[in-house]
Image 1: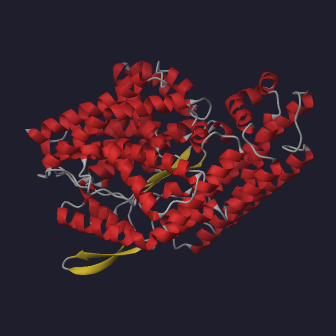
Image 2: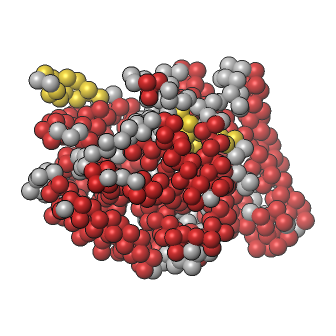
Image 3: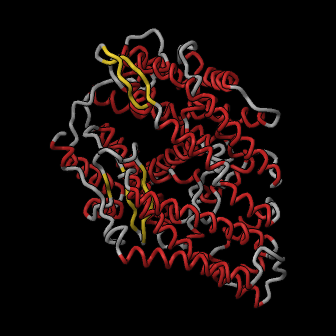
Length: 601
């Protein structure tokens, strides 16, 4: 381990509780459970979700206000505990006490889910516009009330909803846990250094990032030889989850699972189609990027295992102090407030950066309490590590702006969750490019385009696969071979001649854990939306920095209080037409042009 790794920080959780065994944690835990139990008495006393609420009489208004306050309080207490425990598990999955507490909290989460469903049904029976007019507190929660009122039209009976919530842990959640456990324990025999070694599937998949093409190929082939060993239970899992989702969405009156997902993500079908139309128009440009990458690597065409191959060289070693100084400085080029926030996150140890056994892979940001978040990264002293850190700090800045809102006002959909992270990542990337030599520019641009290609081209393939899988699953189960064929068709349709059509990845349906969640149907397109929306906002910032900054923080604070179209309109953006999305793709096309010029120099 290098000195750089030794110096990497661990986050400080003691500002909330001393530890999981402390009296302070136990008291907060008992209090949160009591608040959830108290909701039972409150809901039962007012027959919430059991009979129509009727007109907003003074008594009904008082009941609504009491429930909004109490439900917000219970959600906040539960969120703090859940984040606190999850952050122990994320940094040490072998912590049995944390795993036990997390399991207990999952059970309490089901109770909160049931309360939420009852409350939605009750709101659906209200004249919400009259309630909003009669109560300032209801007015503050107007968007949530209107959204709940619309959602209530898609609820089953109270008994059916309660049963669905209780069965979730033993149905969809159990299938998802099977996928997670099975794939994380899958060992792959692969030839390394002249001998066969058995590595976890995640380690073998990471060989795709190696500079040695033969090593990438061997990793890819070993992976494809191993997936059939797990294909039978994984096919059963994905078939069961999609059937459950089809059943529940139909019983709730949704035309398709996609219609339900669009509602949850606060956009409409016209907006989705406008974005996807612009994405299809951009496919030739991404294929041009892939062909340029093939030239850079000296290949006639890219195979699947070449998608993540490095191009260019990152000659600079980014130590942690250098990364910290660079991010704070570049955030400061945007605004003093963003710079002060980043400096505070580093100073108060919001970040866990050291890779170590038992720690989760990748990176994420999670709100903790008050206006604080915690950021997990596995830092590497290269530009990639700096970029990931800036991205996750963007999520934390989003949370900072939402902190003044109640829990019911913070319901940010996935489509808007990437807004600040993409924006902050772009600030840092543009600054890094201006300071880089040709080899470093190639490295940075290719890494950025590689991620964009995944977010647009690969996600479009996953969207098409899932859309077709849902349709076919209404008729019958699909075999492993049929699932593979569906995936290959989607990949050929999107990657086109940008990749060797004979060297694709038929088992991507087994790889991606998001497919194995009843609440994660069509998880894919929101990431494309987030990338393009974030880039579009950055373009608006460049056009008129002061006007943009005047409204940006309030937009971040409002992502749970209005739909995406309403928020975008604040900046003169119409997301329901392809023009905005084409403008975002123009930024990516400019990067492809720049990459192509550097490669062909």
